[in-house]
Structures are given as C-alpha cells and as structure tokens.
Amino acid sequence: MIEGPGLLQELKAKIPRLRRPLVLVGLMGAGKTSVGKRLAHLLGVGFVDSDAEIERAAGMTIPEIFAKLGEPAFRDGERRVIARLLTEQPGVLATGGGAFIEPRTRTEIAAHGTSVWIRADLELLWDRVRDRPGRPLLRAPDPKTVLGDLLERRYPIYAEADVVVDSRPGVSQEWMARDIVRAVREWDAGRPGSPATFEECVG
Ligand code: S3P
Image (cartoon, rainbow, N blue to C red):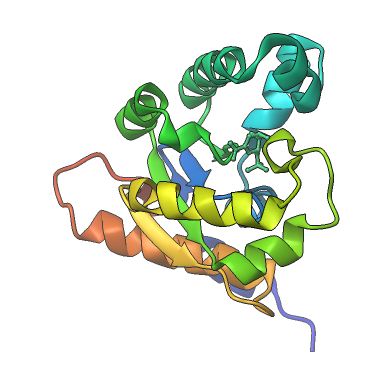
C-alpha cells in the first residue's frame, strides 16, 4: 500500500529538531562514527568526526601526528578542533576515544553540547578493533591488554557524560541511533529550565 503525504508528515513530526550538538564519546570500537552517521541521518543534521577533522587540519594521518608530533600535540589539536566544531551548526560530533578524557575538552563539550557515552564491554570493542590497524595506542605487543587498561582508566570518566547508551553485539546502528534519541529526550525532560538538546515541536 502506498501511503500518502499525511503519514510522511506524521513521521517527520516524530523526529525532534536538534538545538545543541550531540557529542558521542567512548572507547575505540564503540561505534561512535558508524552510529553517529546513522544518527545524523535520522535527525537530518550534519555529521563530523573529530579525528577526520584533525587529519584534515594537520594534513597528516593520526598515526603520523602521533609519530611526528607526539600525543600531547595531538591532544592539543584535538581540543582546539572540537572547541571549533562545537560552535558550528548543531549536528552529530563523533570524538576520538581520548578526547573526553582531557579535562579541558570535557569542559568545552559540557558547555556547548550534550554528551552521549556509547558503552561497550571489552570483548565487543576488541572484536571491532582487532583487525583494524591505524590506532597508534594499540600498536603494542599485547593490544587487547592495552585496550583493557584504557577501559579501566577511562570508564569512570566517560561515566560523567550526560547520557549513556549500551552497545551490544547484534544491535543494529539504526536501533542504536533511535535509542540515543530516546535517551537524550528522557534526559532533556528530566532537566526543565536547562538548555534542551531537542526542540520537540516539529511539524
Ligand atoms: C584514541 C582514539 C582514536 C584516535 C586516536 C587516539 C584514544 O579515535 O583519536 O588514535 O586515545 O582512544 P577512535 O576512538 O575513533 O578510534
């Protein structure tokens, strides 16, 4: 059956309008980029990945930046790039796994956006990153142990994010994106009077 424009209007009305950037945080392999793209599509807003922006701004890949300039220089560039992206048209911003761990970057994110931690357990993360080179922190003799150590150290800090959603094996990106919208709406509703992430009355 072909549905008329009425249904389209109705579906559109269920998608809230974004007023503040949605900032995805979490460890490597959590799905920040893939879910973020799906989420941006669902909301009809732009998507940007901070790692890609840093690479563009530096004219180097992340491994090259780590090798040539070192991690502190990368973190500094990351903070500046994220601060800039946060003030642009509200969209979905996927951050590199270490960004939210830096206190100044975390403060910038808290001031301008709504942070969403995509939480996943070690096995799932490892499954997703094990065959993908290009992450300098995992270029180690035992990368799974490194990932586990990062998880131990970083999870208490990611827990400061405004909203937490769990990523589980077999859950689609579409489902994750919808789950994020639901969780953020709930979070908005629990803070009347504070800057809301979504403007609900969309027709
Ligand atoms: C890092 C995660 C990477 C990238 C860099 C450092 C980290 O991003 O920013 O390799 O410190 O966890 P992803 O989380 O997108 O892999």
